[in-house]
Figure 1: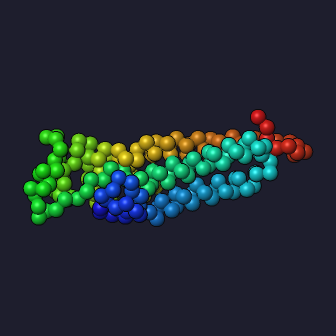
Figure 2: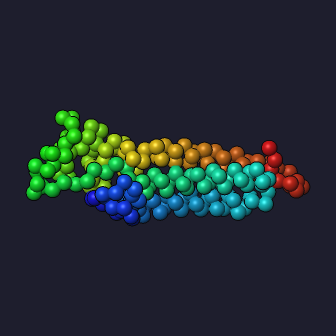
Figure 3: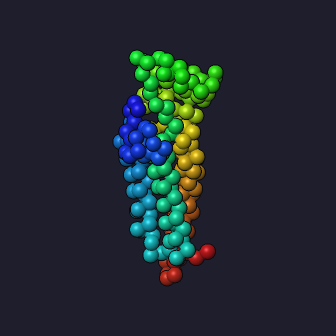
Length: 178
């Protein structure tokens, strides 16, 4: 559909893994998160207590999981119709409030918008996010909110733990404790 690639499942199945048109920017996003995370964990690992080590892995892992789920979950793309078969497109309208998209030749529900970056209609369209490489719509909105909240929490976590590591007495052998 448009600038979207289905990794498996295709358009007809419920389970889909999608890659949006801005996948190079998504790779940069992964790198921006992975680079500092790797540096922080490897440079401070020996100074952290087991509690902080486990918490570091959980927070970092959740951030990556939620980015992955946001970027690779179908946001609610509406399959394109055919300009040659307008009767089929008219039959696809589910309610009188559905609007017709002249670019995709399909009916979209209220809240559905045509995304010009993806060249596809998306149900429950919120915005197109180049950092995740795809649209944010009804199918991946909860993953996006989880990702944004976790990346914010991860930044705060890294700042707090870094401050604790840098302000710890140099002769201390046991690392950070609660």
